[in-house]
Each structure stands twice: as structure tokens, then as C-alpha cells.
Amino acid sequence: MTTLCDMAVDVLTTADGREKTAKSRDYAAQWFVARDTDTPIAIGTANPPLRPARPDEPKLLDPRDVPKRKPGSPQGRIALLHAVAHIELNAVDLHWDIIPRFAHVQMPLGFYDDWVKAADEESKHFNLMCDCLEEMGSYYGDLPAHAGMWRAAEDTAEDFMGRLAVVPMVLEARGLDVTPGMIEVFRKADATSAVAALETIYAEEVGHVAYGSKWFHFLCGRHEKDPKDAFHALVRTYFKGALKPPFNEEKRAEAGLPPDFYWPLTESV
Ligand SMILES: [Fe+2]
Ligand SMILES: [Fe+2]
Image (tube, rainbow, N blue to C red; front, side):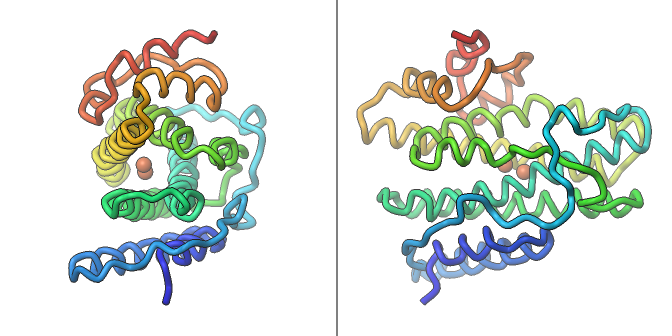
């Protein structure tokens, strides 16, 4: 029988973005149908690839070599959506990767519900960004993209709590800080579909940060750790550099991230 870990590895080893997200959404639907009928799909075990399969395009460049474009121009707006599409594709893989990567850790079914739901939403986000790019005469793969997006996953491949601290609670939380400004760029340009797509992303990302915080706290409870101290130690171990204000304090609070979690990390030690 196909397990959730098998499904995750199938998504991770699919290179094409649209094909990856179609599989991801289909598996998520299967997971929730099985949950609704009280016949949950087994979690199983599987070996996730060290890095997920990627399409031949976009070309992946060192962030310093990715050309900067003016956000006020149509080309600049395409570049912005292309960068978001790239982040979303990595987010799809990050959400599926955690399942087989840490399948040896016993977790309640609710953990898998949250991760599968978030993986499904990331897949929707990637598709939305691709649709917007296509509407603007471009496509995902048309421009170079940042290499090194998988770095956080590799660095935390052996540390479940480290993965939760860095991916949802630092990287996805950063998304909450920057998305309102991005929405403004597209609103000024009357790009209605991009505004609607980014608003969907913004609303759903609050949930992803909240899942991270919820399960991080759960594991702190299991290991009798102080959540704030554990978070600071793990971010300092696995995340290079300081966190950058301004923070979206309101949305971070809504997602269960209090200021005393992130403010002390704005100073490198
Ligand atoms: Fe997303
Ligand atoms: Fe997300």
C-alpha cells in the first residue's frame, strides 16, 4: 500500500513544477479523504532525496549574480513574481520533505494533517504565481533564480526541531513581513490577478507559521525544553546572520510567534 512517505518521495523526485504540484494536490486530497472516512493512510518510511528534483529551467545562480530589476517596471514585476514562484516551489518540497525525513519521530496524526494541508497550499501558490507570470507573457523558468534555497533543509536534515525553528518560524515568518509591500507594488500597477494571488498567499502563510509554532511547542513539551531558549539556540545554530526588522508583529502574533522569540535574534552574537 502507498504510504504518506511514498507519496512525499514521489513529489520530491518529480522535476517539473506543474507536474510536482499536481501530484502534491492529488496526494493531499487522498490524505484528507482517508482521514474523513477514519481510514488514515499509513505514514510508513522512505528515504527522501538529499535534494528534490528540479526542472532544467530556471537556471540557478548565486543570489549575488541574479540581476536586479526595477520593481516599478513590468519586467521588475515579472521578476518579483518569478522569485515568489521559485520560493513556493521550494516550499512544496520543504513541506513534503519533513514527512519522510523525520518519520522515525512518533507524531500525532494532526501533525501530518497540518503539513499535508500546507503542502497543498504551497502547490496552489506555485500554480497561482505561474498563472500570473503566463498572463504577463512570461513563465516559471524564464528568468534565473536563486540557488541555495534548499540550504536550510540540508542544514537541518538531522534536527527536527531545528527544521521547525528555521523553516516555518524564520523563513515563512519573513514572508509575512514582506508580502504586504509586494501586494502594494501590484496594486499600484493595477495588476488585479497578482494582487488576488498574493493576498491568498499572505492569508494562508499565517497558518503555516502557526503550524510551525504549534509543533515546535509540542516538541519542546515532550523534551521539557523552554520554547524561547530552544528557539534562540536552534536559530543561532542553523540560520546564518541576524533577523531583519521591520517585523509584521500583528501577523506574527496571530501565528503564535511572540516578539521575545524574534527580537533578540536581530543581533548577531
Ligand atoms: Fe506559500
Ligand atoms: Fe508557506
